[in-house]
Image (cartoon, rainbow over all chains, first blue to last red; front, top):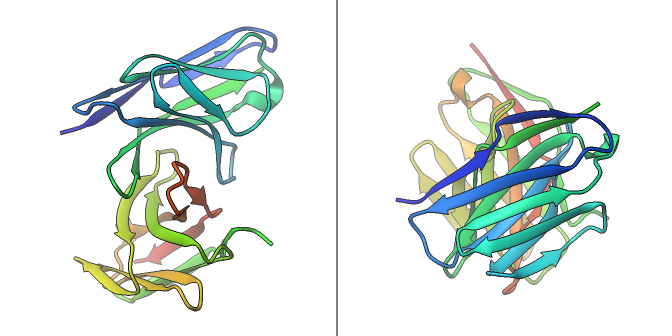
Length: 112
Length: 111
């Protein structure tokens, strides 16, 4: 069966510091991968998605970037964090005809 | 107009009652519909998918889709306190890789 991992689970970072969040999926090949952000009490905002190694689509212009160096690895990065980057970051994977998405446990980021 | 609209709630029902959650959408080309459950502080969990008009039942959950009226609903029978969560409606348009999510309805089941 498929499993999705995210780390770290929680992170507290100062404004202006860099960021690297990692997501890995097990038990599947060539999945579609997604990064979402959920601000406190808000809905899901799609940040990036990828249909293959090195293929990244950005949904929202911002100071974040994403990379997919391996088939089942998806990385979210920032060179300088802003206060507004605080939130719950969720990675998801999907495959198949209907593209059902399954979420990882998430990373809760607080920028101070 | 938002692409996916949900009543934010909170919706409160007594234990054992039927909880009815509704979602309307604006894009008539939408083809795939999903319901996610999100407990406080946790990630969303897929609980139902529906692709054609009519009802789809899975245990205590029933998803209903009416493409002509552009709405999809989720019924939870015999509601339990453990069903208390935020329920997110999502849809996929055509062959798009992305899902569009509603803002969610908060459900509280009172013991």
